[in-house]
Image (cartoon, rainbow, N blue to C red; front, side, top):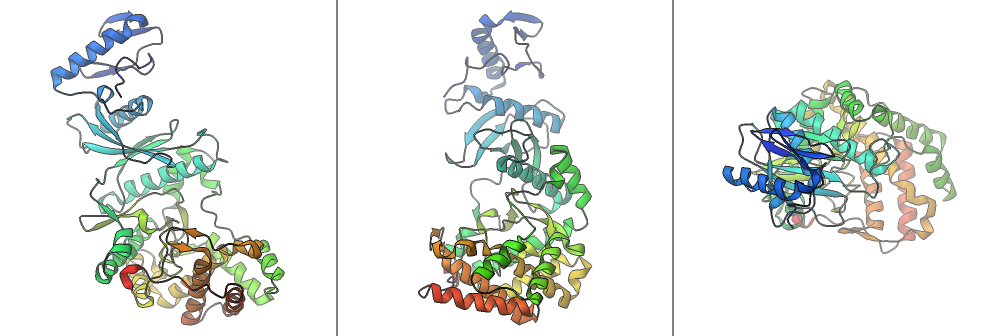
Length: 455
């Protein structure tokens, strides 16, 4: 679809000797000549074609396959021009996201220039019925700000380590950020797990654990730096409990639901639950930037190097929340099966080695695994919301797993951790009783199978 001749006066930018200027709403300015808007379409279009044909460049808005992304692209040009301190022009736009997704992804190509920017970049825009940058009660606004803050934070703080795509700016009003393009020839962790062999999958998963350890090690003690970015996006963002990544456990509701089933937690068990809750809220020396959605499809493998993407749930929190995706397993993911126990232990030790470079508490192996058991308990308790309507809970499918195996496997994971590391005995006993009760309710249900790569 050609956009030539269809741009409103406020959307048109004139290009003259490399200077970008904004026309007024009543006239279009080309060089020193002012024209009424009635003449704008034909003359402006002709002028642009002359300039760009002379340069040998076809502008993005004259491409046959361009969609009407005018406002986004003009704002992206301005953002990138400010970033590079020179005028930049986008000459090609391709939509690479599927319709109906909650984010619009555009691959843009820049005209040849003398900046250090890559020629191709990605624009990621939040998709919602009504985007309001000032509405922190909106899930969509929250996830956009979290994504922006996480991408910028890691890019600025750990840029040379290349743990995530580089961040090149964003537009608060239009709800988009601009990121490094990892290309179209990459794959995620999903492929090795579902289609690869055990050796390949293990190699990539150990990279996954090391990457998380490096990310957490690099962000330990950087709470103020992260809060500064949040504040620039919205003054109340740093203090806003996000819908997508709650940390405080609904203890009263958990106790109520367990009691209704006949498994009222005793005093010792309730004290352990409160201890877990306080640890999640106040991680102490284990405070780091956490992703909180460490799923296989959020890790891209390119040129044998793993990078993490999508920070819509990210925040500062207890570092071990992320690495426990290996053990729990993968509690927020569609691609959810089990990993071999021996591999999980290798992943946790590799992670601990990476984390301990800056988190001295992780060097204490006993303390590390005590905290890991408590955060494992946190994930188990956080997933007990289903108890409110247990009789109505259906074994629905999501991705490659159904509800009942997910629930049983997470209880098993906590029970195993508590046994292995000798911690949280009261909650352990409650989990064992609940596990037996659920198995009696779901006699045909089995724990999650191993990923195909390990079968």
